[in-house]
Length: 636
Image (cartoon, rainbow, N blue to C red; front, top):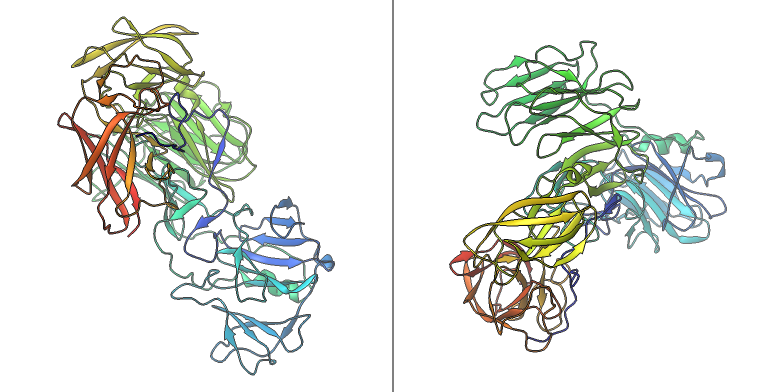
């Protein structure tokens, strides 16, 4: 199986941990439109000299671009006197009485009407054609709110809609989105997924979004419904009347409930926060409710966020509005008593909170960034001082926080900018061992890889035998179990680090099959091309795939640990290996060590001549043990 393979995996193991905050995807969202969508844009304009493109997002932020939207800079305000003012017209498309009609400044007789769709007339309104209505959803989003014309090119127009900002180079026949670069990502809340993947992001008003491994942007999992007509056109109409440019702002919800959370454990609790500052708790799935006990503010400030411990029933965190005073509160007894964790948290609104998997660290996100403090969710011990978690984030309002309990990654959702990730600081306080293939606690086989989270490992042994260290950083290291490691028991893993010697236990089995994943996506390549299979390159019917795997045990001839396998005639796996797609057995052509890699195997499998398309469930098996289940993109 000698083949040139291009995957996102270093020869020493999986992707390294990030130190600073890293943006996941760009500012756009794939949603089946003419290009990536964003949140609503309420205004767009072009300067009289054509050099500056200006936009105001629905949140009220103002932006300018001097390169047709390739890059943007935030500005305090837009000077309306520098912008081209198109003229209004009275004509409207038949049956569209509420349309806002604009005259093209450089094309005699041309009119554009903004309504549920974008319309154009080339004969002063005698006849009209819809430009963007396609199937159930316009190709640039619903409810166009503003239009701008480029003095440098009469064919170039810009339109703002509830789905962001769009540009046409042919007067509206075709469109491209400018939302991948404009910091206007729709706000969302995190929902956890398995296998160490980035969490699902529940986009407000649109539905769930996923970020497949290696994908350039988040993908909306459900087709959004056209938005109801909004008053976003108000800003544009004021501008046409000679007024200043401004955002329409975001109207506050009048609903009483502002936050909710559900704890884990055998007797879960429901916590509901109210606009008037009250917190209600239910122990019977909402059949009855009791008010929270003592310790919470009684000054009418609204509850901004709630977090409930997913691993236990009684712990929760409540965040209250306000730039100062008590803002972050904790309960460890199911809400009967609360204590103030705010301590020396810097002044400013706090908008989201979460906690570490072990319940010993609390994270809070506010307008001035993300902060971290040691504070137990198991006992009412005082919180330590708050520390800033990096300073690389854009200045923007956070919408949500999430800690992946398995990988120790910390995620923050920022309004307009999207999702950022970094290693959570608390993981550096205690070491953890994970199966390196999928960052799980599944057993490792002899010759398998272990990820050490929380320390730079100098040397390592497993049951007294040397375990090669393949990679080491202060946040994450990787070691390989010897091929002759004893199986069927919890092995003793001794790690030498800068903090001293640590001893941990981890189960070892003779066979522990697993498929390598990165960010939850499988490392499976096309055997013919060596290219990683993903959303843009799905597996083809009748093709052969190479599945990067772990835990397949002994090989023939034997091979030493810590040494990359040869690319020509790599040692073959001794055990019989099977592969399954949606539960149906595949023909396994071969299984061997992965040439050029340490501790990894290639399983080559033949796909059937016809596939149903979409996502398929892929698994491997050895010695009667099944691997993790991964999703493989399939072409029909």
